[in-house]
Length: 268
Image (cartoon, rainbow, N blue to C red):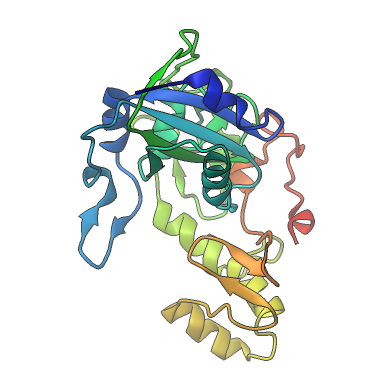
């Protein structure tokens, strides 16, 4: 069976989505690149646990919106189901590498992918197809090297409040543990954290000591005042909401529309 790339692309509105495609070999290459998390109960590395049998091509989606927003998976699946697209399923892989191989963006010094369409304000998903995807574009802008605008620029390195970006000289690497800890539990006076948002909105009656106990032991309970968390998306009264956290590495004047200061207050 065959399905046209153009048919798939037209299902996703241009103002909110960018759509690319990679081959089975490119999916394998992306999936064997390191990612942050293992499946802790078994220790299985997600990147080495993908079954490639039957996969011909993979569609890579970029969705406009802040990187906290994981609702694109449900949205993409709903679009495909409503249009009766079959023999496809969501994939877990190194999404950043997949987006680069699909020609949707370029690697930046901060370790993120700068989308040609949405800048850093996007999220990435991948969908595997059992059917052969035809009419694949031949003019993809695949650039696996560092984004040229990052050359001789270290704004993101200098602005990171925990110095998690080690990208002054090769090999570049990101201290994701330091980054995640700051995003989740920091007490920075001006940069918000998940802990601060959770305390202010979900459990404001807790003492500072109780909040710190949750922060040290985790996870934060999201089961009060209309809030919920399903492991991917925080919701208020059933609607997905913004949870502001550190975006300093994406807010530089040369990289973003925020003119060097991310508007955290607009995410609340």
